[in-house]
Amino acid sequence: MKKWGILTSLLLVLLVVQTPQFAQNTSTDPGTAHRHELAIGLLRTIGTAEVTYHIKNGSYATWQTLLSSYPKQFDEFLARHKGANFEVGVTLHILPPIQFNNPPEILPGWNLRLNVHSDGQGYDLLLTDMTDEKCGYAVLTDENGVIRQSKAIDCEI
Image (cartoon, rainbow, N blue to C red; front, top):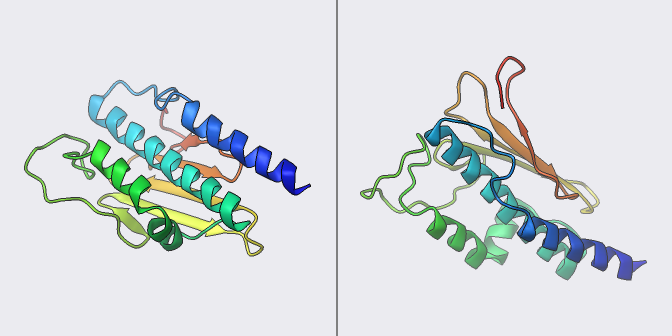
């Protein structure tokens, strides 16, 4: 039984890593598109860290545990987005270094809710764009690795 759990987790890692990062994005505004890409990329980074942690430890981890266990993965994510103004989605070259914070606002303008199930065998993750006051864009995922996008009911994704 444990062998199947490990194989399933490895398959999930491959799906998270191999899926085109921007496949779900349909926005025509470049700033909005950039913010959506950033959110999806961050969820993929967190999902990969969760699967890796689960394979090694047999349970999923909290945000702080992931940050301390896989600093290289999260530093690489920030390096890929160096110069991004996380609050308004434009690229500037004169910005202070960005680093992850404690929830809820883990990056400027981004609210993270990561709940690990009490038995450690699942998690629910919601990342909300706090700058999108009209539509409340958010991305969510869980231990199955499927990333979903959402907005208020009257807004187009």
